[in-house]
Image (cartoon, rainbow, N blue to C red; front, side, top):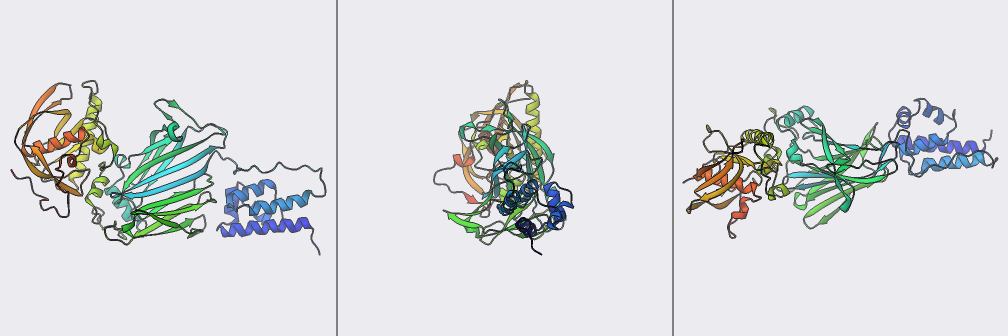
Amino acid sequence: MTTSPVDRAADHFVTALAQWRNDRGMTKKQLAARMGFDPSYVSHVEGRRHKPTEDFARRAEAVLAAGGAIWQRFQEYDELRHARSAAAHRDPPVPAQWMPPGTGLIVEQEVAELTYLDGAYRCRIIRALYNAGTEPVTRYMMKISVDRYPQDPSGSNRHHRAFPLTWEELDIEAVAGDGDAAEPMQQRIKLDRDASKEVWLLFANEHGQFPLYPGERTTISYAYTVGEEKWGQWFQRAMRLPTRSLTVRLDFPVHFEPQVWGVETSLAAEVPVRTPLERHNERDRAIFEWSTDQPLLNARYRLEWRFRGVGAPTYEDSPPLNGHVVPEQRASARMKGAGIIQRGSDVLRQRARHFQLPRELAEAQEAVTALLTALHRLESLHDFSKGVGLAAPQIGLSAAAAVVRPPERDVDPVVLLNPRVVGESGDGDEQYEGCLSFFDYRGLVRRPLRIEVEHARFDGTRVITSFELAMARLVSHEIDHLEGRLYVDRMQADSALVPVSDYQQSGRPWSY
């Protein structure tokens, strides 16, 4: 028995459909669910009991991302089906940017970059968005999730309970638009957990709202930072929205000797990514990049790596059993993990804003509470035998507030609001100082042995307090922070920083 050209074309379509479905690791039921059809419908089409329709072909092409192969087979079938009757009704041609039913927001291009720098990972996501729906888009969900030990979920949970993500360390930035037209996006917290955060990025700011209306396009860019002690050896992108193009880029120091590979996870299987990663070096950086123009909806694309070089971060297979001790890591990484802003951040180089007291009493009390909470957390991580101070910019607040705990542990921390040095002794000395925002080194700094500081009480009254010896040094250090200075700015030009590993006076108070 012979078959007609139309039947043969329908068979070719079904063959292409089944081949791409199998390549994508999907069952007929899974494909039907993703296409929005009854679970039995794909079986009927592949079994030749139903003829393919244009709507079915459109959805299959979009979900399977077949590079046009499925759609081409349908066009061949459709041309033959209508060849005998030129006057027959023809469905309109498939739109160039058709998406499955219910589509609202489309990611036309995503570029995801992860950069390792100074003991932390900085993640930046750039997405070109198109509103293909019928309603204006007023917000965008940003999700942050870390997993220090992916092969040990319980150990990872214990680790993140002891060392949770903090909003201060994340230092989230988000804008919508390009260049000079970019608008900061307000943030609204949706979920706050130890190892994950969810934030609504609003198409709005203090100047007004700028919704993304149907048919309009824009680009959003957001970035956040996570310390190396909380970030596992993987960077994953989950395709939660229809996405046309995805590029993932990793940026590591060359001396880490990084090795990188990629994995694609779909509904049915986990396989290596289908195209190779590309690597090139830029000065002392190793750049890895992987791209696809056919990312699958609901698929996950994960880049993994290991470092072989001396001095690179180490990743143990599992955490210590008690969950409260992390593998040996850089001192700055421990501070960053505790929510301390690190050297290089703009906030450390800006003069802090003074409180208008007593009108801003609540704001001042809130800042001091945050500082004391952070100080308590720090004292559980390190023995500050010389005393310790913490200024509001170091936890991401541009506010003229600081707290200083003397070397004597049984003394309450001193609270300083709107402080300024109004007098100092002519005699001074040189001592090695450290800084929570630059904790991998110590530097020799000259300070006066006594200072007079004018500062405010919560009710707005001004007082002058005299500080001597160690407290004079600690208070001077914190007031420098509030004025946008670091201790390295006060070091002699010929004085070198000493790595903390070579510093011989750890655990000892200053001597006078």
